[in-house]
Length: 188
Image 1 (cartoon, one colour):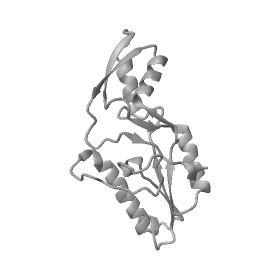
Image 2 (image 1 turned 120 degrees about the vertical axis):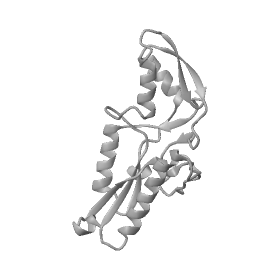
Image 3 (image 1 turned 90 degrees about the vertical axis):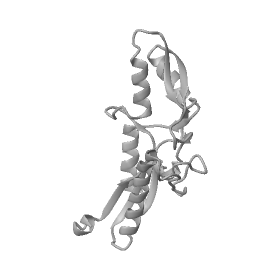
Image 4 (image 1 turned 30 degrees about the vertical axis):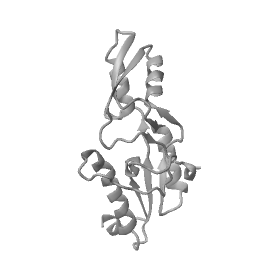
C-alpha cells in the first residue's frame, strides 16, 4: 500500500532458495513448484514466509502499474554474515581447535549434501544486473551453478587452515535438503 501511495515505479522483493524446499530438478529453474511440505516444522517457516511474500508481490501489484522483480539468492557468503550459516559455522568449528593439527568436527548430515555458494560481491553484481537489465515482473535466481559437497568444503577449509579433519556425522535436521543448486541462465 505504501508503494502505491508513494507512486514508486518498480519494486524488488528478496525471496530465498528456501522457497523451493525439495525441488524436482537440480539445477533448479525459477519455474519450480514452491511448497511447504510440513507446516508444523518450524525450520520451514522462513521458506514459507518467502512464498507468502512472492504471492503478495505478484498479486498485490498485479493491476497497479508497479513493475516488480523477485530475487531468490542461493547461499550467499562473505564478511559480516553472522555465524548461522554453513561456511562461518564450519570455519568457527575448525578454528576453535587452534593448536591441534588433527581434529574432529560434527556436522549435520553425511557431508555428501551439496550447495552452490556465491560470494557477496558477485551476488551484489548479479542483483545490480537484474535490477538494471532484467525483465520486469519476473523471478531471478541469484547464485552460481557450481555445486560443492559439505565434505569437500570442509577439506578445502582444512587445507587453508592447515588442519587434517575427520567428520562426525549427525542426522540432518527435519526438513533439510540434500542438494541446492540454481539454474542461473536468466542472469546471462
